[in-house]
Amino acid sequence: MEMREIEIFLTLAEELHFSRTAERLRISPARVSQSIKKQERRIGGALFYRTTRTVRLSPLGEELYHALKGGYQQIMRGIATAQAAAEGASGTLTLGTLGPYSLQIRDTLDLFRSRHPEVRLQHREIQPASPLDLLTSGDLDVAHLWLPVDEPGLSVSPTAHTSAVLLMTSAAHPFASRESICLEDLGDCTVVEGRSIPTAMEHVFNPRHTPSGRPVRRGPQVSTWQETLSVVSSGQAAAGVTAEVADFYTWPSLAFVPIRDATPCRWAFVWRSADEGPLVRAFVGASVDADRPVA
Image (tube, rainbow, N blue to C red; front, side, top):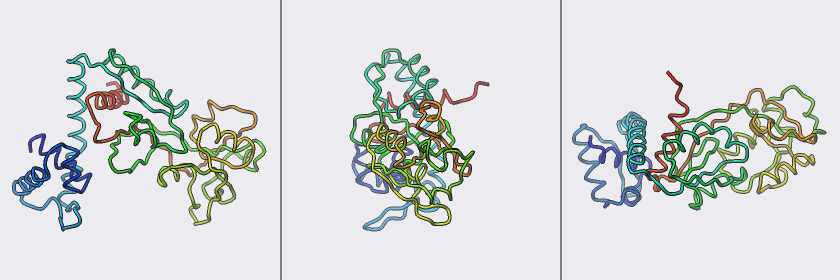
C-alpha cells in the first residue's frame, strides 16, 4: 500500500462515510471509492460492508485497521517533526490544560520548545465541567485531557500518564476521616454535575451509578473549577478528582479520600483530526518521545 492509500483507508475506517472522508482529505468521493476497491482487489477480500445508508468495517477491515493505525501515525509524526525542523517552523500552537495538570507534561513542553524554538506556545485553561468545548470550537489546537475521548472528528495520542482517583469532600463530610472508600460508597454521596461533559468522561470521576446499580445523586451544576472547589468546600457536594489535586489544593476546608477500587485515570493529548497540521503532529511526536524510556 502507498501512504496515500493507507491514509484513505484509515480515514474511512474512522469516519465510516465516503463524503466526510473525501471532505477531510480534500479529494473526491469517487477517489475514495476507487482507492478502497483497489485495496480490496489487492488483498482479496472486502474491507468494508456498504449499503445505501451505512458503511462499516468488515472483520478483515478491522484487522487491517488495527495493524496499520499505530505504524502510520508514528511515521507521520516523524515526518512532521523532521519537516518542521528542516523548515524552521514558526507560528503559534495553542495548548489547553486543566489547572495544575500542565506540570504533568513539563517534559513534553521542554522537548517541543527545544525542537521548535521559533514556535510560540500559547496556553489556555480548560474547565473540567466542559472539557471539549474549547477544542471543538477551534480555540485550541491540542488539549491535554483525561480519557476516554470518543467524540467523532477527534484524534487521541497514546496514553501519556495515569493518575489515581480520589474523592474530594468538605472537611466535615462523613467520608473525610476515612482512610479510603470504594465505588459502592458513592451511592451515599451527592456529587457535582458538569455543564457539558461527555458521559464516558464524567463517569471516570463521578459515575451515575455504583457497581451494584445504586444511583449516585447529583448536586449543584458547576461551570468552572473554582465553582467546583467552592461547592465542595462548602459541603454541598463531593467530586471525583485525581491525586494531583490533593497536592495543589491543601485547603483546611477540603479532604481527599482514595477510592481504592477506582480505575486509574489515563491522560493523553487530543486534537481535531481535520486540523492535524505539521505543528500538531510535531507536538504529539514530542509527547511520545518525552514519554519513551531512555535506553
